[in-house]
Amino acid sequence: MNIYLAIDLGASSGRHIAGWKENGEIKTEEIYRFANGAEEKDGRLTWNVVSLFNHIKAGLKVAFEKFGAIESVAVDTWGVDYVLMDGDKEIFPCYAYRDERTAAVVEEAHAKMPFSEMYLKTGLMYAVFNSVYQFYCDQKSGRAEKATDYLMLPEYFSYKLTGVKAHEYTNATTTGLLNAETHDFDGEIIERLGLKKSLFSEKPKNAGYVLGELKEDVQREVGGNTKVVLCASHDTASAVHGIPMQGNSPYISSGTWSLMGIKSDKAILVSEDLSNEGGVNNTFRYQKNIMGMWVINKLKETLKTPMTFAEMDAGSLESDYDVTFDVNAQEFFAPDNMREAILDHIKAHNLPLPKSEKDLVRAVYRSLAKCYRETYELLEKNTGKTYTDLYIVGGGAKNKPLNKFTQEFTGKNVVALPIESTALGNLKIQMGE
Image 1 (cartoon, one colour):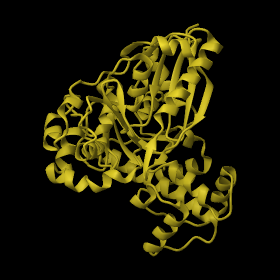
Image 2 (cartoon, rainbow, N blue to C red):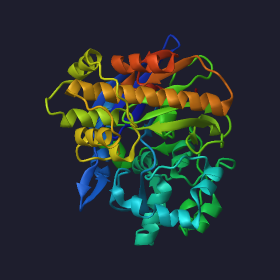
Image 3 (cartoon, rainbow, N blue to C red):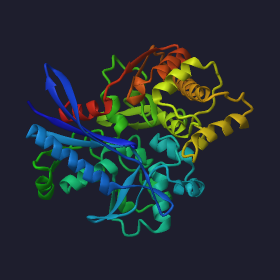
Image 4 (cartoon, helix red, strand yellow):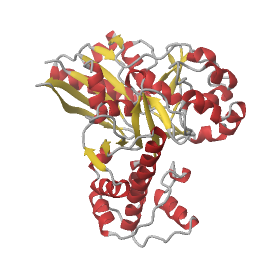
């Protein structure tokens, strides 16, 4: 029996999930889990990639101790963030996407190339944290001066395992620099923004590309050797690939972010409100990035009366507070206090104020559901198609109140699959599926 290992890093936790085929089905087992989160350093939000890589190796060691042999391993993470490299040396820090450094340069970047022109080339919807603005910051500050290349986070960790550098297509599309037709870096965007051309000289590889075996020092540390494969290394791309979907229906990959969209063979460039991000085999995920469970998780931390998630869910169904708000408003991106940010937003829009904490929870869930409805309608409008189902995977698929409100708002058949879809997609690619 061949054992494959998916290393799935999220913004709040990471996990190693082993997978194998049994009677034609993929079986999985989580064998290692660890916490993650951005750390503040010198007033900036950064990722501790040294610690993350130590966890990756620790999980590999557990896998070899448990299974003896591993056929292959692949790493996926969130998109947009990267490590600048000077040869084989990192240029630290590794900034986290919620850091505010990019906000100051967006207007300047768009003066050199308006976003509308960028969108027609890349199909990537605007977000202040897109890599293109991070690269612009690095160029302007001089950080990029000594950089020979860069690696998106999953490819950085794969490089640390193998010593082999490469870019992977699905994650490269999150940079805002990849041309939607050529599937290669767009020279005009790079030139007009004054970015360092040598950083973007290598065309991204497709998922399934074999990087090589573990370095000898890594082998000694983890107690074994295996192949390292590029999966669809943007975690949402792997998640969508892992959905056991009938036909092509809208999906939500529900976690810290709710990524809602459909699969498409070609980029759809009719609306800057939706994004074209890479899928398996040079396809696209035509989707919207929605604030997601981040809002509810941060609200939990700031409730005046502490509540468990179970109590929050129950309370949301007991409440009759039906106010909704724009859950994607910028003030919810990285507030010091989510509860106060929501209350300030409600007050600013002259909406009835909640009377209890459970009212607040209900408002968040219903606001997410309303956003899902609006996005579903936009998907149908822009594709000219009508859909009946909505597949939900990820941690949010287990949230019964949110699923209930989503069904009520959309009027669609909600298929909630509480599976490790990202790990399944990662494993499927390693298995050649």
